[in-house]
Length: 223
Image 1 (cartoon, rainbow, N blue to C red):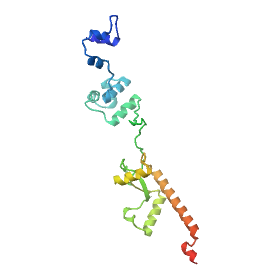
Image 2 (image 1 turned 30 degrees about the vertical axis):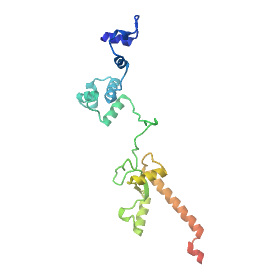
Image 3 (image 1 turned 135 degrees about the horizontal axis):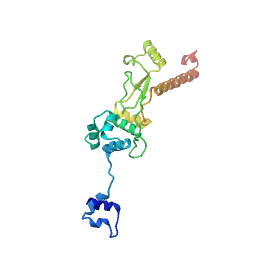
Image 4 (image 1 turned 90 degrees about the horizontal axis):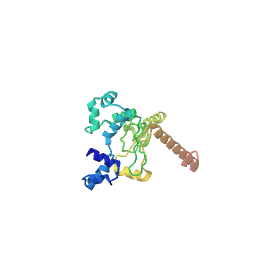
C-alpha cells in the first residue's frame, strides 16, 4: 500500500490514473491530496529546530531546559512561554509580525515608554490618559490657597503633570466619539508638552483680555 500511495504522488502511468488501482472512496482520495496541514506551535518549534539543525537534546541544552520539555512542546502537550518562544525565534533569526485580521495592517505592542503613575506602575492598558493640570496632592486639588499655587508652580518647574483617565465606560465612549480613540498611551514628555501648550494658550488669552480692558482691568474704565 505504501508503494501504491507513492505511485499516487507520482501521477499517472501508462495504464491510466493511479487512483484506479486504489479501493478508496472519493473522500479518502481528497484527504490524501490535501496538505500540508498547519503545524501550530508544535510545528513552529520543530521548524526552528530544523533551521538550527539540532536534536531535541541539543536544543534543550541551548535553552537550558530538559529534553522532555522540548518533546512536550513538539507534541502539543504543553507550549513554551512567550518569552521562551521569543528566544527560539531570535536563535533562528526569525521575526513574528501580528496583523489585523480584517485590514491586514501590522499591529504592534504598546510602547514601553508610556507614562506611569507616581509609583512607577503602568496605567491600565484599556484606559485613555489625559492631563488634568500640573500635579497636586489629592488633598490640595480643591484648594485655592497660596500653598496650592506654590505646589502647582513646583510641579510646573519639575515638569510633573497630573494624569487621569475615565473609569466610566459611558464617559470614555463619549470622549472617544468626540476626539477619537488614541492609538497608545502617550509618553510623559508628550503630556508635559501638552500642559505647557495649555499654559501658553491661557497666558495668551489673559494678555488679550488685559488688552481689551486696559491695564487696570474692567475697573479702569470707571476712572
